[in-house]
Image (cartoon, rainbow, N blue to C red):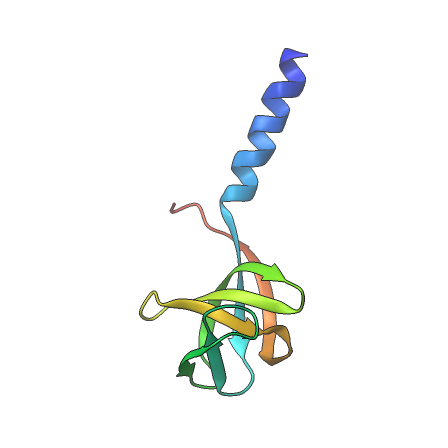
Length: 87
């Protein structure tokens, strides 16, 4: 039982160090919630960190300034899962 708990803990820690990155395939209307109020526009070609996905939408972080918001998944391309051991 102790070995199982240790294994689960190690897997959980490993997943917390991974992240997904994507590139915006068009100018993106960044929203406060999926389908919600528009907060700003991020330019086509920007790389963003994908923090969460929900019902066809992604909660993203603009890597250049740290601002966050929701965009529709249809405008994200080149999505890559990476390991981030710098956290």
